[in-house]
Image (cartoon, rainbow, N blue to C red; front, side, top):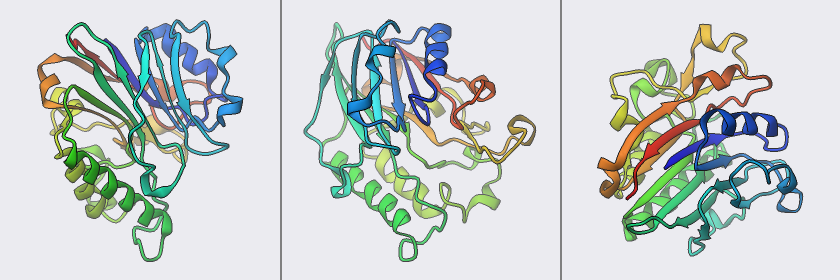
Length: 265
């Protein structure tokens, strides 16, 4: 089973890139974040020939939004809360049938948190911390089994997940309060699958700002996109690939796709 997670930063704008990704990598499942399209305007007609006939989505106008496309039938799992009491389309969970037992797949888009890393001065940052607290509390009560969690979690937790640990300690996405909160969430019963394959001693990024005219030369990246697995799937992971070349596509997202090959049987 090949699973790709990607913050596409507008589904309708980057439909050609989604098609390119499917043609190049032939995924079985794609999880998208920041689709930025209301459900009423979701471009179903433009996606019918992708070879991913099963899909679910949750979207709103101009902001946020998540979607899952699959070769396998999907069953919506909807017993999760509206995080922080907001209906802002940041989480989609599905059950996928396999020969052994179903896989529970979570697709998350965590709030970015604005620019000021102070919850008293910045409501967006307060929202981000509250979101992390609520998800952590929920998963503590229900430890994951046969579960995969992917998405743009908007936090680069490790020193080598950012281009400069010291310079970014006071920058939203790498502040201690955020990385500690993300660690509390993953410690509810997940494993960082990306760092299982690519050692924490190596630099690893999935996002490069649009502000850098030559993203490759400056290479000031961050690992904001993640794949987590429950421990019972640890030995099933075959490979993880960050498709960094996608940052050079025409009108790219500032995030690149992350791909996992896993044998869930």
